Length: 304
Image 1 (cartoon, rainbow, N blue to C red):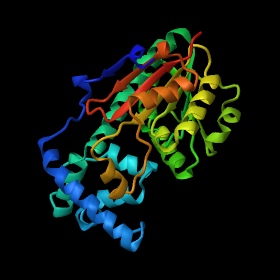
Image 2: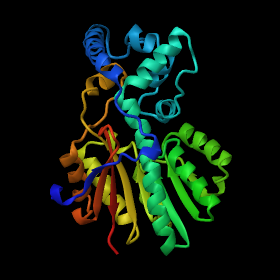
Image 3: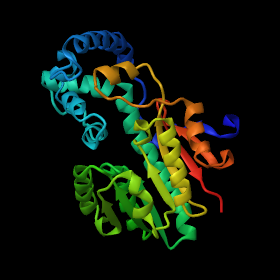
Image 4: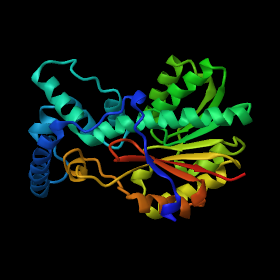
């Protein structure tokens, strides 16, 4: 089944993807040393340390913010929109060192670029068949990428209507601000509810696209399959699911222990199992890696 599914790596030069830098090879021994040090501290003092280590969240202000908001939209917002070399102080250099060196941070920014590219491509195709394209973002967070794409298409005269569903009210408030600035706020319904209520919320909306980016990483296998199955039933024929997954990588222990960011890491076979057991036919699936091959996006179509 896996062999029938196209798996590609997107290396589009024009998107400005971030690649591995030489400094990362120097960082690996440091990261592993810090993992052991923080693991010992947590064993002795408990898992909720004010500072995991001076060399990460002690000296690096952005790292501290990310650690304290790990798994939510604030951490992602700091990663997505990080600006390099604006601060020449020691703390500024520490921010650049970690945010510029950690592959998972680079892969997150690559994922944002890849998601926007895939949305552009598929919305353009769907707009040929539909007067308006309807999108549901599940656990939407700030929805930065979706909003930026909606703005682009509005300028082209293509209408996208969307539902943003998130249990975190602060995430929706932030996405409202982004949508207001992008002048697409009147195209979006913001819903502050649990994903358990997805079908009720989207009843009668008939989405062409369901976007689930950065959420499957927090659901175990059976719940991930259940969610995929529910989305399959929700999509109209010819509709598309856009879903992300994080791959196992050498930085996993560092992300877990030092950054306090636990996730479900899935290899390609495990990711495909979630999608196909959720109802999608292997012939209607394509999976795309960003260049670092840490983040991957599945594009899954529901047949007509």
